[in-house]
Image 1 (tube, helix red, strand yellow):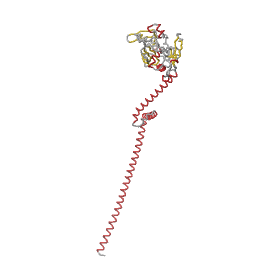
Image 2 (tube, helix red, strand yellow; image 1 turned 135 degrees about the vertical axis):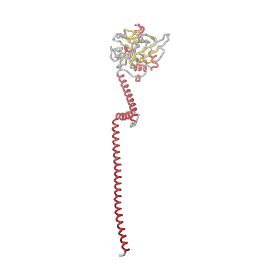
Image 3 (cartoon, one colour; image 1 turned 60 degrees about the vertical axis):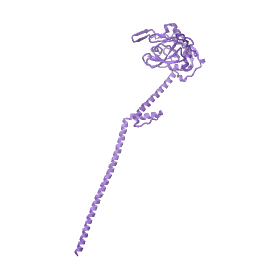
Image 4 (cartoon, rainbow, N blue to C red; image 1 turned 30 degrees about the horizontal axis):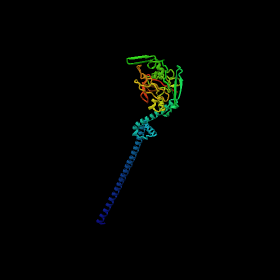
Length: 373
């Protein structure tokens, strides 16, 4: 073997050895690479898993958050419920307000509004119920009454069994009224008036104009609101406790000082009367008597007395015991109070065709016209 051949063989062997190392190295590299890929895959998977886990945690967290929110919602459930309730209420009432979490608080005010509406509806219901109660107790609404032809009124009379006095009566539409002012002497309860440094005591809570019995016969007596309501409950407890300086809750109809089977009219019953005689703008002229109405100068203010109601200008008695305006004005108590110190009256003037419903102090002495139960 020549040297050249030997060197050639040695070179090939060296190359083969070198290739074997590279292959091994490549394998190792492949293993590393594979390992790297696997690690990357593991990392990726792990990362994705972590991400998924994270998402799951996030979902779990969201779920917890939702649960917490739900739990938080439960904590504020009354508000939410109110909100929904408000939405339902408003939907049912036609307002169509929607409920939202951000609107929870605002719907709270909506709720108040709804609640207010409900209260208003309840109030209307009570009012309606009240009206029904009133109707069932003989108190009529003016809205259900039409104009009454004067030729259809029916005149009559009645006797007060307490003292034997007889009074004219008149039926106007569905109401039967006394056609004279009440003249029952309500003397069983002494009246004491005190104001700052002045006071006086009367033997009665009803009086004759000018302390003249003749005036009582003509005009009837003047009563405080407490006497008109029979606040001591002598004949009925329906107006018991009603008087000056206090609110009361009478049971209608209130007999008050009226004879049995009759009662003190409510404000609504006066309104019914006004409607029946053609409206308040002419009721004064229709209800006033045909004589006796004039002022201090003799100017005539008489009515037509078209319905035989025969309202007379009995004047009034004030807190201090002063009596005035006889001949020019008429004041009639109703059983409807305005507040603790005032109650409604029907008021007629000599110079006016109107009939008014005003509120005056309960301590005044005014006339009483009773209406039949």
